[in-house]
Image: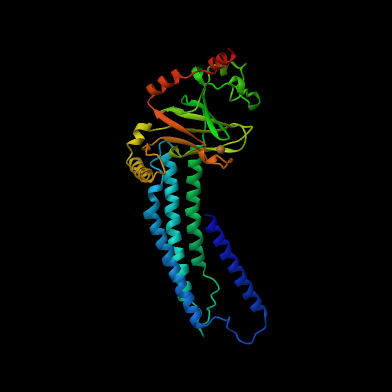
Length: 353
Ligand SMILES: [Cu+2]
């Protein structure tokens, strides 16, 4: 890596010196006009432009072929499908417009390259043409914006209808903690100033608040499938971002305030593991791992799919590893799991002894 950087720097320095000598040359008054483009130069540039067009189309096709398998699998939340189709249609439109305009731009650049004796045509305006290329983008963009706004308000609507599960996501450098409201599904008051590590009050819960007693603090997020979840995000130190890619969910965690996001998971972890895209990805990843293990670079434990909560805001040196496992399960499995977790009240009692 260092060798590569040194070479890159040397190349850049060489280019800079070359450019500077060129500027110096240009500043000299000379009689020969070798810097003026000839027909041959123009032809050469025209061909290069055409070659560049073929190159960008080639690399686009190559990227589709090579990298489309890196895309996320089908969305695992109720709003996810709507979000994905908005994204897909935006890309389809951008792709069509980009393909046409780049083709025209490069083709005309090539076709009307400079030639001795060729004169530019003065063409003042064409109302109809201008009307068409104004009205089409206006209609398409207005449509996309309206659809986007509609989707946005739908997704960002955090309300307490339909008895959502209330979960706090607590971010700190460099890990996540989740808190459930317990029996009453109400989170007790909390403030980072009340954090008391010695007494295991890691999230700064208000011990005087009766709602806090039955809160449950965990390091692995469990969610019952089909039930809406309202997340309340907090951060202890710097800006973080709670990113749950499979659910198409992301929200900043800001110190000193509570941010919210809500979604309904529609597939359990087990169901998602049966998804063809996911199975394909697991197969590919494990093949790579086995290859590395054979060279002694990795352990050979097979990887299996799990939903994940990631930090998506560069928050410090271990940001890359700030993550928490999410398990979506049936309601019975979830109830069984939550019943086994210790409440905040019990943790406080135990630490007092
Ligand atoms: Cu972070």
